[in-house]
Length: 127
Image 1 (cartoon, one colour):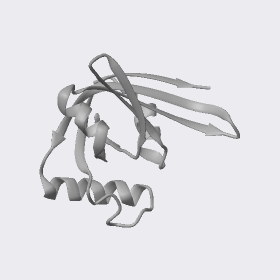
Image 2 (cartoon, rainbow, N blue to C red):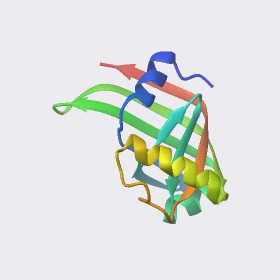
Image 3 (tube, rainbow, N blue to C red):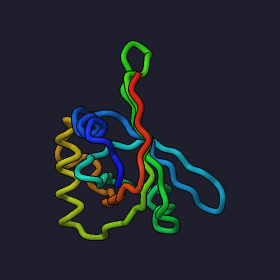
């Protein structure tokens, strides 16, 4: 795993929107997600097409950037392998941590399933 320490600090710092890219049958699908990053692993809770795609093809990309007045301050793209965690207790713990980060209601997204992404590589740039 090769996420630079400065990028890790930024990924952990504030609630930014990430864009998760999945691919199935040669067709890409990109969608916004809330996330939590810690020590080379990204946690998201999701459902629908994103979850179905990850179950079929665990190779994913995640793009996160921080902007100010329309200008990008920094960006990071993570490539990794996703694992669907079909465990309600682990999902609830992850959901709570993600919702706390985004200051959301504790039971927001209660129907979603936990997906953990083990980061394999990262590209990072500041502006």
